[in-house]
Length: 391
Image (tube, rainbow, N blue to C red; front, side, top):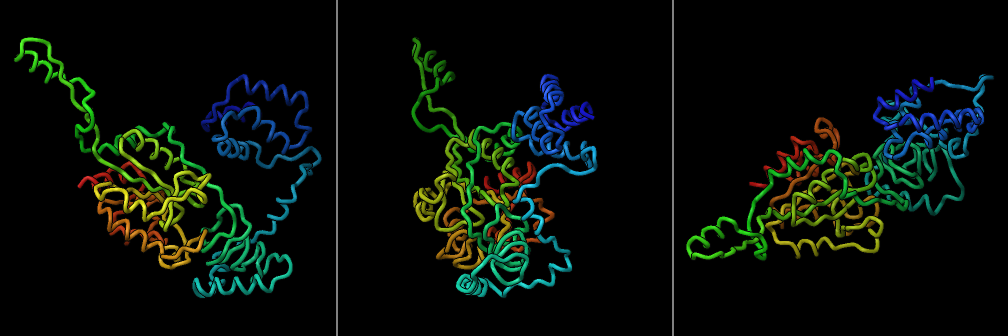
């Protein structure tokens, strides 16, 4: 079984060496796992996995190889953490049950009802349909289901239905040094090129030197500015929430764009564009950049690329105060339109497969604002987007 586990990990792309496998065997002989499957899981992961990016592959192989493994007496001996027990109360509803749960009737009604619940509620609730609680069908709380609610006290998105999120959320910057998979992206981005020689003459002009030397009769070195891609780009990346599932693709695009475009500025936003963006996710609340400042600072010949799944509450696009994280004075659609009015060469790249776009209202809404200049974040989609920006 252990040898099969080793070969399955190798087949799944986890770079496990013979030395690491033997280390695990030595640890098992020393009874480091205490006969518990949970202890064995953590022991095996510590011994065999060197990079946390391989944790997901390890988990899938572990679940496949050791499926149904129990202790000798037929009872599971692992201690179940309290947090796991609380999660057991989560309700997983059928599609018919979900259809029976109606939204409160719009953004204003939702916010008004939340104020009433905050004023009236006196204790913790679980499994209900009215109060702020957990594992129920109330519009307010965590680990339940409602077609249109406010998420409070939940670590991450589950159904992508939240209108607002009442928790501090931490986003991480994209890694500009990512190289895996960027080569083909670079090739696609090269469709957006317009070469020019600008700046100081710091490159030897060999043909000019030969011509001048021949005509003058002595060595006459000629210099010229370096030939560069004159295209200037503004990149806006959606981060956090449902975009966590597309981090690797976004990082590959970010890394490729940094090498292809010499004049490039990048900014982060969450879900939709509003009055402020940022360049460092760790300080996104304290070091914001006014969107109005960007509109005034950069010339209109910049190409603008938005990267995001466009999957959000429709109120984020249509309503003042509709942002999931703060109370925005103007709707997201207003700021997107201002961006498009300033920069006429703009596209939206969407990592969600194109065949799913028709089922999400917000994707259709943003696609309409961009006049159908939304493209899938695939190599073919990138090439189409670059052609649109080059026109």
